[in-house]
Image 1 (tube, helix red, strand yellow):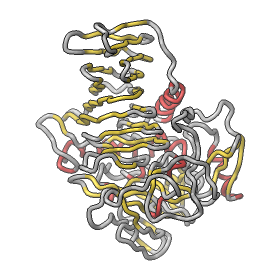
Image 2: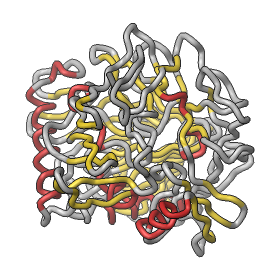
Image 3: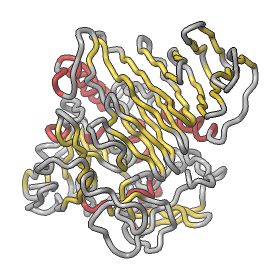
Image 4: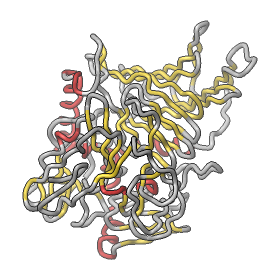
Length: 488
């Protein structure tokens, strides 16, 4: 069942998201500071990462390892090393950076009318931006002394290197302004500027293909197709459509469940507690669909298996309040954030099953809940999930044409669909995933599915001042534990 506005669930998601958007304006003290006309109470989603990516969350800790679904706030900085990353905005607009790139989120604001103000600064590397049709939003990318202003439905690639900068416009009409002049760059045109010794920007009707253009195109299509007809504030809904399905469950009504899960799977057994200034701990799920279900609605255990039901208010950084209470076996088991003040706290050791590529085949694993499955690459995941449920795992050939949402593997190690090595035993501290081949066949780290923080062997350990590992108890038991823990 798709989250379209024509269905009851779509309307419910719309109501949830709209209430959350209004609440963000009406309660500016929840997450950040405000001015008279612009509220800074916004978070955007780190929607996809692969290999080594780091995020400075503007909390005084500098760059740290990160995972998919990490909230991004104003003042944050995103950096790719061997990896790549995508950021999703509320209206399903998206921005992507390739290996060896760095981008600052100078301003993430919202006006009293509900429109958004987005100021990004590309320090180096390559940035793709594709904007939705939403009117009234303000989106500017700064490059050195230039300001690139993007209208609705525009789509660009921007390269910034020591040899100079270049803008290419895939869609729309983009304004480029410096202190002396303003230029309009139309669809199918490029603008070269900031080269050493270059007096004037050079406008041309040509295009130099980029290594990551196909990944950008597939990702843009995914956001456009999967989000069709969904509320502009229900970002993340397109992932629910691909990675799971709604079903009518006795005693609970309509419930969404991720594919590749059994009665043993627990939605809170793995994740990360991230500490934010003035907001405290926010729970971050590593699953590729794990944004909307952890910021709205409620998790229910019905018929012996966990599922998510939309409803209630939208929660920003302070999402523990909407994750409680949880209906589980043996009664209600709230989840609790850690005690103390630590930047990042890993729940469950970061070790969960990951589906992954093996040669020219792809292995789907039970209780992976979609971890490792590239989005929009496989058709009929529901049927594949049924095979996995009966066999425990399922292997099939790679789709013709390869993985549509997997960037190319480069010499620096970026891209590829590879689980991080497990080394046979869980570590007590998270490490940065290197993306090497799995040697175990057991539970894998998050790094194999676009994670970033993991408990694999090898790699670089996170400083103890930045992260720690919390115990996690299964919500399917009648009691819970843990100072960083999960359920009590």
